[in-house]
Image (cartoon, rainbow over all chains, first blue to last red; front, side):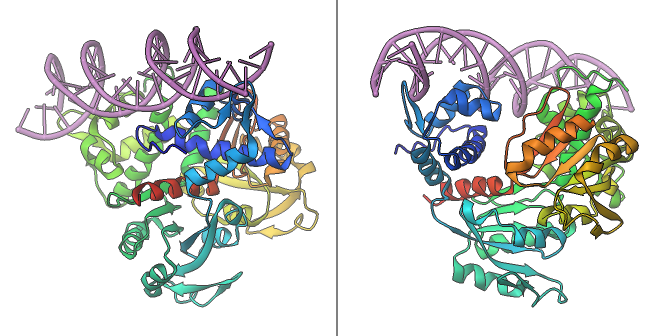
Length: 212
Length: 212
DNA sequence: GGATGTGAATGCATTCACAGCA
DNA sequence: TGCTGTGAATGCATTCACATCC
């Protein structure tokens, strides 16, 4: 596999996840090959877009045939780094945190929640499925011992920057942030934020657009 | 307020939500005015970006002074359509659905969950806070009676397209989709998707990038 | 014939840089 | 002087279109 990790547009990487998701769906339907046109249409993208995106990472297709579903899934997982399970931690055992801790969708995608932390003494010790909520004081040790590189934060916005800094100091390199706040992290650490209320705002704007 | 809803870049609208969020934070700190430079730095954006984005919607700033926090908040809410409360429905009272139903962050942002639906007879009738889970058969009537335009879906991927079609048929114009699947909806209807596992994949990719 | 991979062309979005106002 | 609003310039991403290969 060629591995030219230079000059790859960020949006292309984003779409890789969509391709993978769709390919996994095709696999359960026992579809063996798919063309860029078909794959694109199912995601609302052009065929050229699909081909260019995939070509950034290698030559996965066969002219006249298309892309083989199963091998391409393997390739994409390797590119995304999800061909091995990544141990992941969660900070914040509140409303959304509990739902994430019980979420069954991580494991098949290559992520396993291995630890949950909170600062609230009332929540520490509580069991969630296989896990027990631990104190934040335990966090650095657990990150080291389990070699955790990824973390999910569902903490109040006011606490989010401080928690992010603790995670980074402990060695976490990627943070999925559910707090409605921007996080400032050093180079070498990635943050992705999910702001549910902000998504609703976008829908509101678009819906208003049509009714005028 | 000028209202040139033409030629506005999608990413600019996206950032409007970030500006609003940051402005709201500034307001709680009793900050009265903010410059494009300050606002941008707190969000990792350039000052030019901030100015251009806001200028798409009107002339909100004062040269030599900056932007007044409180008036700009009002303007942005009006633009986004969140200056009035939008009644919103939820389909899917599972793991994530319950967390969303209990989520306290919608109300201050202009959204109120007014109905929850599910197909599972075991869940129908169950109370979540102020709401009672209703059958999907009730949905079209409720949408009409309460004039609901926005919906949140936390249903299995396999059911998502069908549920989306039911919502659209009932009159819903914007859908926030938590199912890991693409939705095909007619023009005039907006969809935004949150795929938590896909976000984790993106972090995985970026984290892998650095350690090579 | 059918579908990929890819330079070239186009189209958007971001950044620059500066005139003009407080 | 300080900071906005905005044309012009730059930089990216997407789309086109076609040579190439199964």
